[in-house]
Length: 389
Image (cartoon, rainbow, N blue to C red; front, top):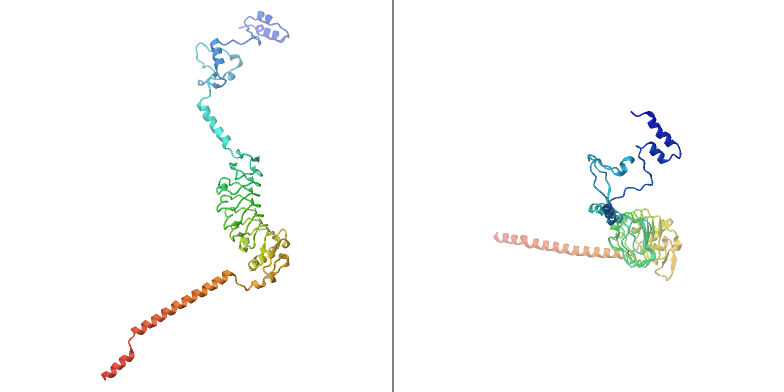
C-alpha cells in the first residue's frame, strides 16, 4: 500500500498557482497529462478521403444491442480504443456518405400532406385572406366564384364583381359559411337547391343584383338565416312559399324592386321578423293590396322608415300616395268584391251542377221509360177477362 504522502503531494502541487507542468511531470512520472491545445489524433488518409467525398447528409448507423453513443460515454473513456477481448460493442457513430433512405421519405410524406391539406391553407388567387376564416375578394372584376376556398371559411366577401350565378354545390363544400356578401354582382336567378347545405348561414346579402323572381323554397335549407338583403334588384314577384323554413329570420329587405303586390302568406311564415323594408316599390293600391295594407298597419313597428316611405298608386287616379294617407275605408269596396279566382270557382261550380242535373234527369227518364215498357198493361188484362165472360 502506498504511503499517504504519495496522494497528498499532487494535491499540494495542484493547489499552488503557477506550478510548472514539467515540475509535476518530473515529480510524478506515472501521471500522464495532455495539453488542451494538443491536436487530436488524425484519421487515416483513407477515412479522410471518404469523408471528403461523402455528401452532407448523415445517417446514424445501426447500433448493436447495449451500445452507447459517444455522448453517453464518460469523459475519460471517450476516444479510448476497444479492449483486445472485444467483449464491449463499439459505440454508435454517425456514418457519412449515406443519403436518406425510403424509410425517411415515407416518414416525411404524411407531414407534407398535413401541411398541404390543413384547413385554411388555400387562398384564391387575387383575393386576400385576412384571417384563417375570412376570404376577401371584393372589387376584383371576377366573372365567377373563385376556387378553391379554405374548407373552413366562415366569412366570404365577393361584392363588386361580375358573378352571374352561384354554383349549385357551393354550400356542400363550404358548409361552415356564416356570412356571405354577394352585393353588386350580376345574379339573374337563384336555382333550386342553391342553398342546400347552408345550415350555418346567418347573414346573406344579395342586394344590387339582377334577380327578378323568388320561387317557392328558394331558401329552404338556410333555416338559420338572421338577415336577408334583397334590395335594389328587379324583383317583380315573390312566391308565397319563398321564405318557408326561415323561422329565425329577423331582418328582411325587399326595398327598391319592381314589386306591385306581395302575398301576406309569405310574411306570415316569418315568426321572428323584426325589421321589414318595402319602400321603393311601385305598389298598386288595388284590392290585392288590401290584405298587405292591413298587415302593414298591424306591424307598423317593424318598418324602419315608417308608413311615409311606402307609396302606392291609385288605380283610378294617376298619382301616388303614401300609406299614411290611406285607411281601411280606402279599401271598403274590396270587402264584398270577388277576385278573379273566386269568379272562376263560381262559374265552374255552376257548370258542374248543371251538367250533373242534366245527366241525372236523363237517367231518371230512362228508368221510367223502361219501367213502363216492361210492366204488364192492366187495361189489356181487364179487356181479356170481359171477353171471356
